[in-house]
Structure formats: C-alpha cells, structure tokens
Image (cartoon, rainbow, N blue to C red; front, side, top):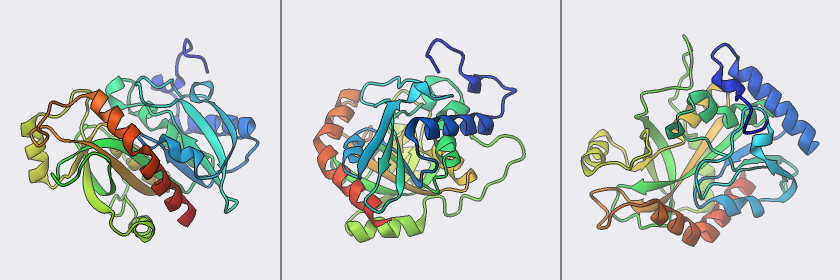
Length: 277
C-alpha cells in the first residue's frame, strides 16, 4: 500500500485479523514462501542480526504490504525480510515498527505481530533499545525480558477477550537463550506511552513497582503475540541509564550511538539464540 492511501486499520469497522491475513498472503506472494516459522522484530541496535541468522531470499519495504507504515523514527529500518535459516526453517524479520506514541492506534502498533502469526510463525522474538534502572547495566548490555508492566493504559485486545499472560515471556525460550549465554541478566520491562522520556520520579515509581527496564514499545506487541498463540522471547539492549540514575541528560542520539556500538556483539548473540531454537 502507498503512504498516500488510507490505512485500513484506521477504520473501526474492519477486522484487524482479516487485514493481517491479507498482509500475510501478500508476503507469501512476494517471498514465494508459504509459511514462516519464526518472526523477529528488530529494534534499536539489533538490526545486523538479520544478516547473521541465515540467507535472505526476499527483502522489500514494509509499507508495500497491507496495513504497514513507513518507520517514523531515524534508527529504525523499514524492510521485511524472508530468511532461510541453516536449520531449514524460515524467519520473517520485521524492520518496521509502529510505536504507540505515533498516535495511529494500537491496531497499527501490533499489526506486524498479527501478520507474523498469520504467516504461520509460532515464535515471536521482540527486541528493543531501552533505559536501564539497575546502575550496573552499562550501555550496550543485553537483558532478557522476564515480564512486563504496561503503563500505556491501552491494550490490543478488543471486547470481552481474555488472555492469560502468566508466562508471556516464555520461560522455555529464556532457558534456551541462557544456554547460549549464561550470564544474561533478566528484568521486568515497563512500557510508557512516550514519546517523552521518563522523569526521575517516574523511574523511582517503576523501581517501587518492580520494574527494571523502561521503554516505549514491546509490551503491547507481546500481548498481541500471546493472543495469536505465539511463544514470545523478549530482549532489551540497555542503551542508557534511566532518568535520575544517569548522570547525563537523556537523548535519542545517545540511544542510536549505544546501539551502533553494541550492534556487532548483540546481533551475534541474537543469531546464536535463533540457531538454538
């Protein structure tokens, strides 16, 4: 779809799952792959993993697929890639993320996840760049997401839809990741609405609530993935210490720079985790 056209997900009377099915059919046509097994959303700092996990057999701008938008943020790619893994499985790599703060609504935020599920993917790997609350987490530290707190005051679930989130961030998949790198730390991710960074008082609130990582993505996507029956693995790249913990003011430039510095190491880590699945 073109950027000038109306996104069908903006219409209240459409079925977002039907749009995801249409998108999945278009991806199958563009890639020549009837079914993908694993899907990865690559956030800030994680993009190079797509070059390491296997052979890219198709790549195209996400906005050419129904319901997708061009990325609104520098530092985020905009491609969908079909990758043949050494195991023979297929991975769909999503470089296009719609953030909640863009104001397009939750349906568009989680459309990539629902589309991945519609392609057949049973595993959803969600990555991001985020602020760390533990002061020993230096910029460039990868952390497994063990759980989340959703502070957006929103949900991708509509109507009387009840989904159990007890093991949202799969213990089994985290165990696989720890088998690849045993010293990985774990923490609770807290999604704020954004786009402003958190205040020092809000960071202290998060600490009181039991959170360790603060960011502006992932939680809503994870809920949608679980609704779709997918198993979820979450990984955060700590790009900076959070407000009130960091000795310097926060900036998006800092996030991008930390991601670039850490990218070779964390991309190799992610590729090794995918190989172990």
